[in-house]
Length: 237
Ligand code: IPE
Ligand code: IPE
Ligand code: MG
Image (tube, rainbow, N blue to C red):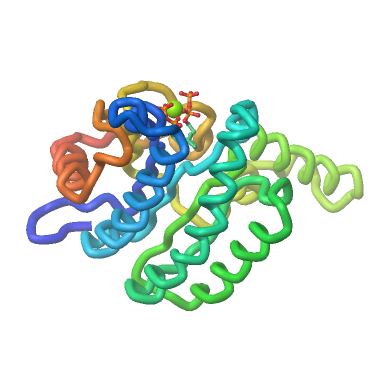
């Protein structure tokens, strides 16, 4: 998308990392680093909508994050409860439709309900799509898709020879989304950590040392400017 001569990526994916290190740097318990991260996400969703991003897909909790201490997982669940409710206001104010990807059935009933209510309340909003990846892992997503397609084949509903890349893309949690144009990872690590493996085949990557709670509109605009200077190719000449 062209906006005042700037190329705005249509779909931005973010791996929000560095909450723990932010807490440590400020002498805070980890849970307050996550709280600062949630506060930042709330404002960044608004900024992304204002900047004209069509789809924002944020990695909030991975299938591997259950390995953290009970205390930290518990603190994250508490924050989900609070922020899934607060997001309703943000989504209403900015006309944002919110959906989730990941295996949400593993969450407690109240979190699943808060998520379902948020999705229902925002389903007709049109300005931006905000996708929260929770209990998301790309390998888990592909495994679930393979299981579903195999079951259809076993039932005689799907001819294995007819399976195309589109069939697989359509069986993923992101079936109704275009692939991300730009993937940002904050916090200095340069890896995907099991995020959007299939979908990021031709995504531009942007890594920054900035810790997630310090990643604001200015930093997002810098990433978008850098994206605008990239020469996207898809394997052709
Ligand atoms: C990212 O921050 C948030 C989640 C993974 C839930 P981290 O908690 O991974 O922060 P660091 O990497 O330890 O600094
Ligand atoms: C990736 O961050 C997951 C989320 C941001 C939700 P992690 O901090 O869990 O990833 P690793 O352990 O550094 O790869
Ligand atoms: Mg981390």
